[in-house]
Image (cartoon, rainbow, N blue to C red):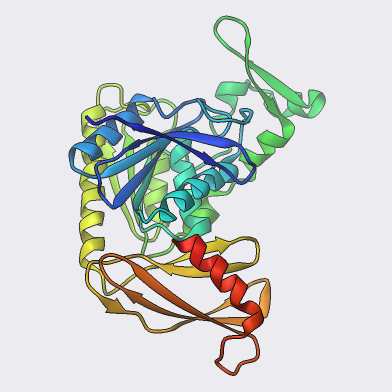
Length: 344
């Protein structure tokens, strides 16, 4: 196993996220996401990273804000906020010419990768390991039977550790964040071209295996693997978990290498001004047809892209045409420069 590289990436709130890159030199990269009250050092995540590394695929495992080595305060909830943390990580690596082959998350991290796919639509493979479908369930086990009544009266609930100290505080706002996160709605929004694998233990004592069956019914392009006898943390089934994830990810990497003719388009945010498109790189030289986009916050501005690709680089020519004549408008050229810098 090679030396792992520590990388620090700021999220959109200015908090530094800390992660470790298992770099094999591959252009492809898999991002790994930990679960609730966990870190990038949890065995499920570390073992998948090592399995990928052993097969020549780079992996990056990081701590969400408020967890592990990352900055920020821990909050119960924060489902979409963690999806935004993942977005910051993906943008960092896409900006460094990496291809994100898959995102994988365990437990709450499984929810986060599914929410990410539903919101950003820029990943082609997702592995949901023991994520929870019904987020209104599993709360009583941690917060007690009358949690809604107490939180309405007092405004918060302190969850105690075994030693009798406060482990973390659940505020009414953070509880509502969880209760208002609708996994059913999100899963229906996942793009049909995005391949999703759900892995779940048949003996999961935290999140029932029925949740995995529900995911398999509603996610458009879905595979399901039940690991017989495995608990929530795969205590005695680490090798099976890692090999299941690895098999699926290797298939996806191979398919993506073969499908250079069908190149997915990825939205990338350029400052707060525009949403533009970049193209995933393939091996063979290929000229893409021109693509026309309208920026959501500037409906009168049309962006036309001509993209030339080869195995080393991607050339992007963009026409900012706000008077419909097909010509560049000089006053918009600064934004073209901004975009080119962002893509390098």
